[in-house]
Length: 285
Image (tube, rainbow, N blue to C red; front, side):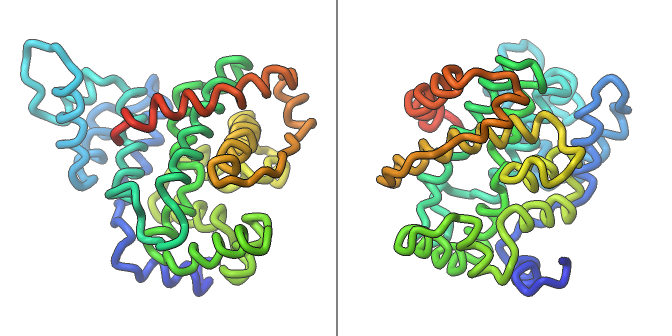
């Protein structure tokens, strides 16, 4: 897999951000805040370019604290593990998306970003309803569940445009179009590869790699199932944004395993347009 020609092109691209593997190690620590060593975590975070200044800037902007926040330790202590983790994940998304336009000429990254936000919102609502996974964590993961698409947009935009054209002009499913253009792989394999390159936690890698096929990995957890349903609901919303009138059929087995009603699923779907608009114009990752 590492030797796949498409992955080689991405790796050699001057547009792919250089993220040290210590970033993934720090995220793993922040996922289990009761066990992590503060000094070791901060040492790893300090080696991620510009992350310290980002955390301090966010805290200064949103805080009413009387004291000055001047160090990475200050920021992590006052933000807490959960908020630090969420901002850190959003930070790598920002590195991949220096602006909302991307580099592809036909594929509309701005519209696709709405799909990612919708998947985050839907996954949050499902997690809140079921209690099967952390709703804040799954919301953050929703923003990067299609990181493979974003990587293509900045590193091999011509390939992404070809995929998008096949979808729109030939009516091919996204995964089918990707396998044709990318010589047998899809955005999920690209996303899993980038997780390995950056040392991201396995639970993030699983969501990125299996959200389209939650039963492909036998031990895939509840978070993957939640993201699969959320992504399916969001895909219908995204299709409408593109003017596609085809209807989507949700996976009944997933709905049953999550112990949800179809009425709840429809309620989530109906809420997405309004909720996405609220966030899209205010979120600044």
